[in-house]
Image (cartoon, rainbow, N blue to C red; front, side, top):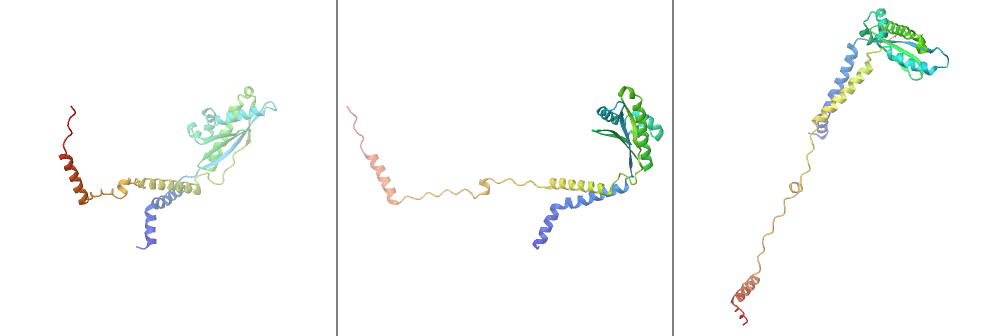
Length: 233
């Protein structure tokens, strides 16, 4: 087999999880953007004004507090009748955000249509103003509408580009995980005894020269025949 074809097959065996998962993820993200129902969003703005001039820090603090209350039942109860939604449903369709250095509250409403999003945002903003101004004497601040919500020209979601990018990223992650699970563990290095050459065989005993063996035999015989020394009296 030619070398380029062999390399191509090796690369295909190694990288096929990514080659399959990335297009599938992108297609899934694009499909979600097509079948998902559109959602519109619109924002209404409320500003907190101090009763006594010069107390801007107090107004900022109360703006943050009222921003957290924008999605609470005591505020949504007045807007539920105007929008035609229940309090629980409306709580999932609006949210309030604030700025850390400005006494302004942004009420964002969502809906299946642009006019519904505008209606939800304006109704909650109106209800929040009424709720906050009931205790204006105690808090020292009052809530004033700053700007009503404007009807959006295009849905906020789904976004074909964003959903396709998310699907592609998910495909990359899934393909990488499959590649990691398929990777074979590297073999452990063999021991020196197993990987190296076999141990050197013991050398055979070399026979002694004939003269040396005869000399050893004669010395042993002479030692045996020699008389033992007499014991001292």
